[in-house]
Length: 377
Image (cartoon, rainbow, N blue to C red; front, top):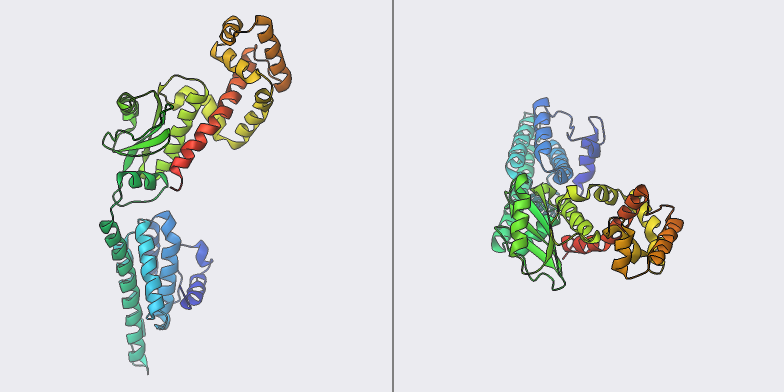
């Protein structure tokens, strides 16, 4: 907004706290009933739209109270107001209640300006011009957004990418089953839609199926796995539309942990990797696990030895056979791992800590590939 913004900020502050910290614009003379309506309209808007709505209402109330229509009736202000309306529409704001409120505020200002005092007729006209200008600008912005969406509907991939980016879309379903997929060396050209929308990049991708209840995830994941031409790791996670980004990250982490722990291709769930997932989700713990395991990756043959030992469930004979080395060579390497990390892999507690550190560290690369799919395209 332009020059009236300064007066709007003062108007918000006149009733107590700063306008940036309160949901109710406080203007001298605004009836309590109207103030309650203002608070209710702001509260019903999406969280990301509330600051814009507060500012618009603050500027509008200040202009109505003063009768200063000059900025609102300029071409620049009209376009800015329309852009604000489009932005609010894109954020999922509700136009009807906002426009009705502005109409009620205008009626209050008209009643306030009417009277026998000199110049009241001119001020009355100015108040009406302000109300009309704000209503026209916001309504025009909302309609502009609606027309642009009708003219260029999102493709399935665009819809999936928008949901993964956290955008609020009017045509989105209420909830989704989010499936993270990692394909084999051949990559994923596309994912079977199974009634949903998908986005892929290289060997990783997401499938979002609307209106699937929380209990349907494993079944849907199994159907997806069977429909893929090659081996793949799949993890489901149910989400409401607004929670799709977080659920996609959780499903991707499960896939990453499955691959990092050398689990076979197939459907995997969070409870299969509860300890590793908890470590991966806490940045400080993940950093400590990475610091712990770094010397193992740096030592010749140590990472390969530890992986073989973990796959053998701590059986040294089987691990040595898998590595095609003498048992004494294996024992030497295991002792070296214990010296470097402070955790003895031969002991159950040490093996568990090293297993978590190895898995979370290896999972980071797969996690980054999924993040690239969910990020800007």
